[in-house]
Length: 164
Length: 164
DNA sequence: CGTGTGGGTTTGGAAACGCAACCCGCTGTG
DNA sequence: CACAGCGGGTTGCGTTTCCAAACCCACACG
Image (tube, rainbow over all chains, first blue to last red; front, side, top):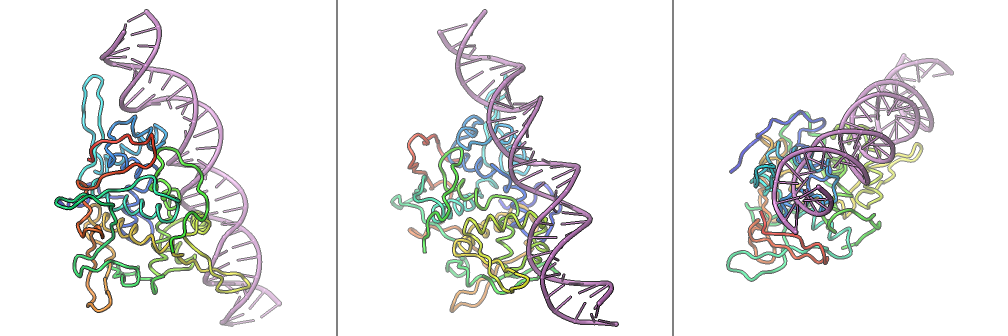
């Protein structure tokens, strides 16, 4: 399911860029921590407040925005009073590589030891610690920094130089 | 070079987590767009202003914070008046998977077609478009959502349920 | 009837952000 | 020499966003 552009994004300043577009959706404060908790299996507002540390009003605002953007959906689990659980949509679940990249970077550069470890248990393999990287599906090689270049598809925005 | 914790981070609210720690460094507005431009080979202040669209004062603040955090370094390229270029440190270059994850997600879920395409040219292969997937290096399988579990290393923070 | 719980909204103040204008040290150019 | 221009910021000021704490409402429990 490669659903494209559910809500048309407002125009962004600077270079036309998917990174900027993505950040306009998940780049606000607490958004990715809420997503993290949904990955971790916590779907109720109170749990999100406790586990993220976000102020309640901010969390409300973020969840509404994420819902609007199609990352999160609310599911009624009780009428009267209406109560909702928050779940990731397919687009939301597809944020897994992003949160894992953040986790890996924080583990490597910021914290002396990881507070959370990811375990990988694909069907038919023994469980092991997850050690994921970006692998090019075309050639099977990892996407390093020195062998990745740019092709700018927007005329006028090709200001660039060698990577570094 | 796995340099750990150059500046001691202030305590964060919520669950102890490398994702939160990482976001405290690169999660502020414009930070990752500045990093993007450095990846793209633009190292001067004016270029960063133009290509990110960030206000000049915000960009100044972000670059100082990123320098403090050890993600960016300033290099004097001219004395009198002193002028600096901004370059990624090793920690900064290690953000590549993060920006690639953002790029991939934005391409897939937000924009009708990618404004920037990554090209992959590993040694000994013809250049081709990068089509990266998040693959576990231990077992070679993609890191899906249904086969990734958690191991919480901090007692008292194990509130969780099944993933989804 | 009093207390507790889940899921918020309100309020008032602090911090971050955004924009435009300004500044400073140079390097041309006439 | 006067003046314009550029790179790289800094200043001032108004607007959002953020935060913490308090409040609220609908129920359930005892």
